[in-house]
Length: 256
Image 1 (tube, rainbow, N blue to C red):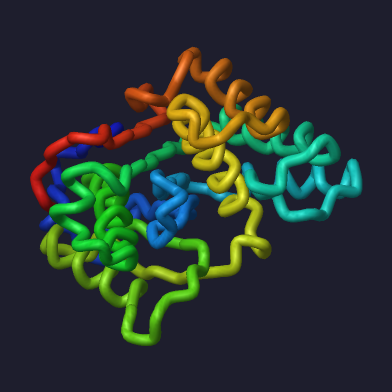
Image 2 (tube, rainbow, N blue to C red):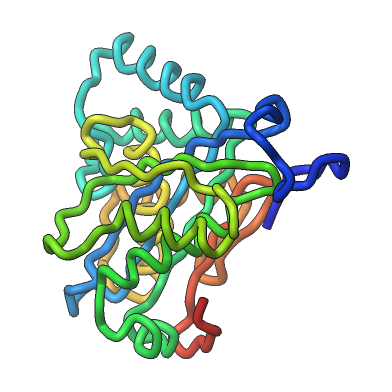
């Protein structure tokens, strides 16, 4: 999908460094929730925010942190009575920020797509879903920079190298300038993604009775749904800003 209006005078493949004023550079922040290796966790979600100026959302959250003296990590799995209001503030701040887009992909480990194309390899799934989100996010004449949450991986897994190389090769141009992973505790924007994808995935788990329903987690999930005007994320959701994709149990999709 793309919300970028192409200037027909200069096509993407014809851009040169001297066309810097016609190239959009966008920052993407990526986080994941769920454990692909755990049999008790049927869902795995990767979410990504794309924005031109991360400063606006980051500064709003930092100002609020200093004002209320809240300096803990925002993490969906750690929601409690003491931090739920700040979590709702952070999600609302994202919803109020202009020129941002959100993309997420939730896979079910019992789905045919997961079984047929990831071969039970969680690291392969992580890379391929990341590429799917980047593909959905990229617009004409854009170059992306990806900041991802750090995930401990085997030494032979080269997530940053593989994602950049494979994405640029698939687009036959410089579409992804670089990939870098950080501990999400050091970055508020990665934490915002954690809250949003946590709420989406928890809604699915509650619907499938995988969880009994934690009061604070349900409150944030319902807060997000109310603001988006949806009753459930079971069938995904899409509007001008959000593109939430949910795999169904027996969904068959072409490999990409």
